[in-house]
Amino acid sequence: MIAPVKIVGIGEGLPKQIVTNKMMEQIVETSDEWITQRTGIRQRYILTDDNVVSISVDASKKAIEKAGLSAQDIGLIVASTLASDYRIPSLAGCVQRDLEISDCPAFDVSAGCTGFIYALVTAASLMETLHVDTALVLAGEGVSKNINWSDRSTCVLFGDGAGAIVLKRDSVGTIHYPILMGRSDRENTLTIKNKDDHTPWYQYPQEQNTKLVMKGREVFTFASEVLADTLNRLKEQCGDKPFTKIIPHQANSRIIEYVCRTTGFTHDQFFLNLSQYANTSSASILLALWDAYKQGWLAPGDRLALIGFGSGLTWGGVVVDWTLES
Ligand SMILES: CC(C)(COP(=O)(O)OP(=O)(O)OC[C@H]1O[C@@H](n2cnc3c(N)ncnc32)[C@H](O)[C@@H]1OP(=O)(O)O)[C@@H](O)C(=O)NCCC(=O)NCCS
Image 1 (spheres, rainbow, N blue to C red):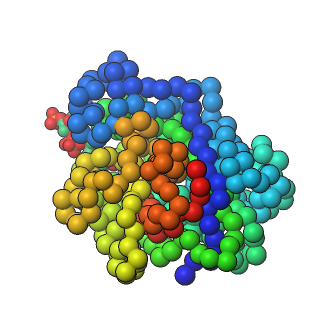
Image 2 (cartoon, rainbow, N blue to C red):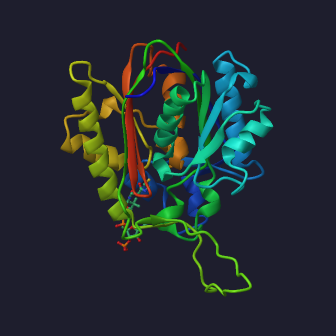
């Protein structure tokens, strides 16, 4: 059971550089047609002279403003990232510094593309434990810095971006049925290895691939399986008050098509915006939530499922009763 909290603010932050599929054709042997048909992606945002911290700060600032609060009202910051600008301080710590948020707990979670779901459940739980009234939950991703730009099987799939929400304790709970799961990835289906620097006592091997490596088909199978399973589990838990809308991690539109074919869920229940952003890892659910809210696809009274899946392997989901007015 999760503490009674509600989402009172939401915001997004994006790099200024848009890279279309046509532009990708100049970089690797690919085509707009291949990318669109196999993934649903048409363009992505890529960091240039902006950075993960700056887009995360943008998103957080907007979310706090939308909540009608000031930075000093925030009592907890939980950020998700797989590729921030620094190892230390944490992304949460950088946002705290740049927004001049007063002393409060601030840390990152690392759960691949499921990171936002992990961050949300962690923040909501800690708000109860630590008696915190208002929390900032964000995801900021700069996956482009960890991509092998000559590997066409991965470089066309990812983009950069950030999103944030503000949570406030309330008398009525709006976030329900948290599921957080992990499974050991013995096959290394999705990895980014850190660079090992030599020490005086050990010479690490010269050849080290420190870019994203993915077994696409295996990830596809895993993602389809856990997305369907999580949807069914959440549906069961909701009983006679089912969710009608779904915001999944935005990885590949064919994963959604597959899940629609193998479950009773229909395509129009899913909000997808990956054509515009590609896969922004743990920021993707937040960017979709933002667009769904901004476009009026979400309205107060809606019950929706948020579901993430990714490296780890990890997956998870929650049901949210949406209350935020446009
Ligand atoms: C990556 C993915 C799109 C590849 O699609 P696929 O249908 O499995 O394609 P394959 O990997 O079998 O490759 C088919 C062919 O397309 C080629 N290809 C791969 N990337 C290409 C690209 N960008 N442009 C053109 N051709 C490409 C391959 O080389 C292969 O050619 P071959 O048949 O001559 O060997 C798909 O597996 C996928 O979406 N997986 C999940 C990825 C994901 O969501 N990851 C993040 C999870 S958080």
